[in-house]
Amino acid sequence: VVLVAASAMSPSDDAPAATPPFDAYAALGLDAAERASIDAARVKSAYRRMALATHPDKNDGDARAFKRVAMAYKILGDAERRAAYDASGGVEGEDARDALETEIDISEVGFANTLVASVISSLGVNIKTAVPVKALEAVRRGETTGGVVDATMGCKLSESARKGEIRLFRCALSEEDVRRGVVVSATSPSGDKFKLLKFDRASNGDGGLELSLQEVSAKFDSVKPKRSHAGFYFTGHKSYNYEPFELIKMSKLESRDLAMFHALDNWTPRECVSISPGEHVFGVYGDNFFDKCKFEFEIFVVGTKTSDGAVLEPSKIHEIETKMSKKRDDLMRFEKEYLAAKSAFEKVVVRHQQEADEVKALIAAREAAYCALTLPSVTVKEAEEPSGGASSSGFAMPTIDTSALKNAFNSFSNPFTSKK
Image (cartoon, rainbow, N blue to C red; front, side, top):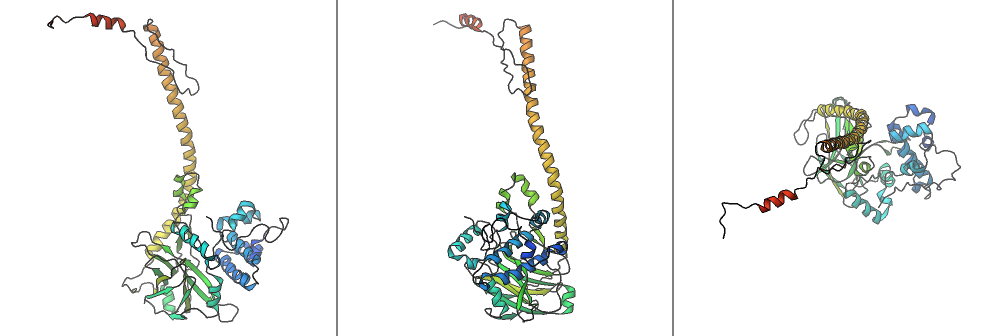
């Protein structure tokens, strides 16, 4: 069973095939002439803005513009696909269909598809979901359940969010907090799915809140029981997101031994490394398919004690992630060396078998020749001459007629044996 996002679009949805090439930059309100200066953060920001503006709820159910926005983000939001698009100026065929497999708005797909998604997800397949536009609009209008909770620095809050609900938290940061570094953490002790969100005041001046950052929860496999966690790390150092290599992607590899080289393919830098002083609003979106999400929310300053009494120092994280970034680059280079060596090895293995067969044939032929010379009365099956990788020598060991010896032995009588 395959789930296709609500933004999936068939080639005939918008226009005949003869229309001009799809302009991904224009669909997101970006200027293609400035593509060199458009980074990933700007692409994501443009996508969120245009997704809100073109959502079918705002356009009398017309989803065409929304689908184009989703398609554009699927192209430009992936570094490799964007590079290919910039080089060719278009996307078509299988690439176009693949580009449309984007995040799913679970609130729009119904109970049956939600159940299927839940089952597939439980099998380890990553089902990507989107924060519903309705939930974001509720935040903008200030109509969220529970209002905004004031979070005290260093104090852990135990909360919950129903499916599709956003819980908001507010905290004021001083210049000293920002200088030392701030971490915003959300953890689910039961391993629930959720998204950690950051909101900024809308740029249009209406005072509403709009989504600016998002982190998807991930499970720590080494922690028992498995907990899910998401965080914002405003420490001044670049930090990274990591998703394990998926089984579906592994199945597309030429051979399973190549999986190691792609173990860090989902290693991506987080969008933001700093934050400004003042009041900030964060949110946790409940992303379970059915059950409500239970989580613990906390904001603390680097170098101070957390609610658990531990002192946070992210220097070790920075050190390890720097090594992982270098390792990813090393693996990309090593894969080329490995594939070349593997190809050479496979050729050598074939030659090894050929050489082994030829040696066997030569040894058999030699023995046959000696037997023919020294034992002329012995019947010997002639060995085949080795030729370009013969797989069998055809040689059989000489056979001696022993019938005369058997008759003589049978006629022999032992003089020491008493006769009865």
